Amino acid sequence: MKTIGELVKDTRAKKRYSLAKVEDAIKIKREFIEAIEKQDWKALPEYPVVVGFVKNIAQYLGINRNQAVALLRRDYPPQKLSINPKPDVSKGFTWSPKLTFLVGVATIVILVLGYLAFQYSNFIGPPTLEVIEPKEGQVVENRSIKVSGKTDSDAVVKANNQPILVNDEGAFAAEVQIFEGTTEIVIKATSRSGKETIIHRKINVRLNN
Image (cartoon, rainbow, N blue to C red; front, side, top):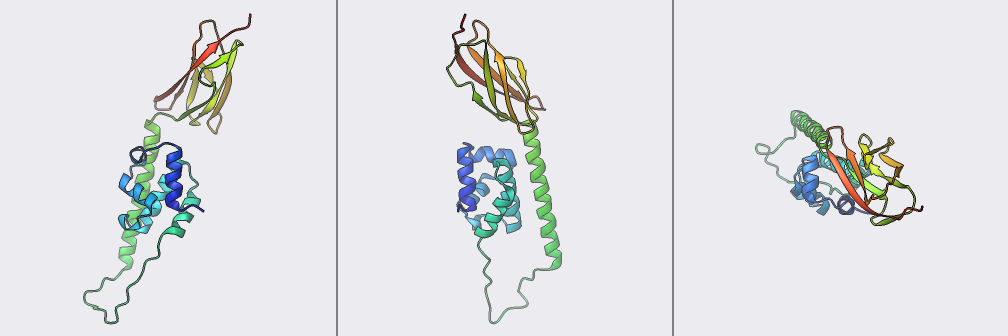
């Protein structure tokens, strides 16, 4: 079974997301993201904060958050307590309930701010767009061609200015009319904030008369 670091790194690599892209999207320093991928726990903040990081990273990469947290819990090294036979009570550090409360509040604030930043970046950023059909250079012999793919569920999709319905999971499919002289299909996804993602697919039209 993969470690939490391998899961994050492999998923990020499959999506071809750079550390800088992930950092910009979820507002977590790339050094922390890289430290999680390498499981360099000494380079990371306290465990509760790391849990928040992993949840945000998992949500952005499409990883099951519960699975990611479970792997983190498994892979995170237990803290070793040093035993001093003659402890210096006057200089010793005591973890008080007040400190626990403050750390908890700080963790919640960080998680909430991280979540809001992630949602805001999703809102102002262009939508994702994956085109399955048509293929680049596809030969078309009829007066229509199937256009299908996947985008954000709240995006508006058009192919050569012809609207296509998007379902709750972001999938779309429709037959788009082809005319004489058509050389490409332009698929455009528009987010709620008006940001656009456009993909061009060249086609070879050979209409049957």
